[in-house]
Length: 403
Ligand SMILES: *Cc1c(COP(=O)(O)O)cnc(C)c1O
Image 1 (cartoon, rainbow, N blue to C red):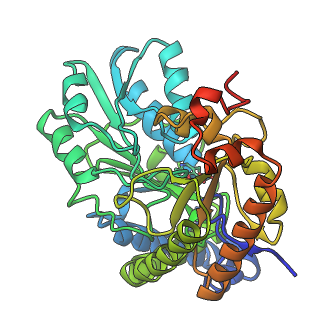
Image 2: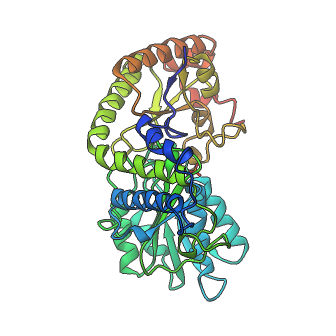
């Protein structure tokens, strides 16, 4: 039997309806949307423009022209930051972000820093929430962009993007948000939140991999990363990924429609999972914000148990410890580190990413599995025995990682 999938922050399965919408464009309707002289090209063009409308609608964009299709959110993040930075008259300027962004933002910012831009990171609290006062204090006359994620992929913390948008607006600075984890789970509206640029990924919302989009508000200056045939109004050259774009459009249509209902269902599952874990297992701590968090996310540290060992023991569930991107290395998650989780507890952390396929029965199974395996693994831990007996383990220095 396949393991229960609870890693929806890493990727989501392709929805059947999305696959169905894509099929014709993988088979009979294979035209190049740039071929305007015949039926094949026109059919493809129509499908792409229809998808563009749906993506625009999902985020409340005024015009479909504000959507640029890309190869995913990594490219969209790169295009937003580098595109705004290099559109400046001089190769200089100040960019504000936070240190718990996805690597697509952090590494892009680091590269820009190397080529002469200044990067500042706004403080986040122990729940991962941005400090709005610090944001305002960090704004400078030469600030060219504020880039703050809508929601975090590890700890699920949802940022106050409407408040950030109004601060950015007040100072006349473009505001970019990486909304990959938020779309389809919480309400995101570029008008209401005064967002100027927004990154989207297909495969995080039941669409296909290798396709995404950047929303760019009319009037925002941007330089393309890729030169060529001038596709996407010159902003992203390259023959369009028609089946992918059609899939993204269908996924956007579904995400936009289902958001409130699906969020409610996910929240019920999340509460059940949290209650089960907290009732059955002692010495657990929640990472991230208790309420300002994605309805499908939980992140717990199970003290005295290695996250990786627990995941191995719970093979019947597909889970992730820390972030999927960094679990190849033995370093503890930079996000947990940034919000002040000690290494000893960061190594014990597990991320739960709920999604459409998860059911109440699965939650029960997962809680049973966790409770059983945590107990088994702790039987080998003398520190757990001490903690249970109330011995102050900090004084005994229970962490073998931090020394
Ligand atoms: C997955 C993810 C990305 C990267 O998206 P791709 O489409 O896989 O390139 C960017 N930002 C966040 C927050 C993500 O979760």
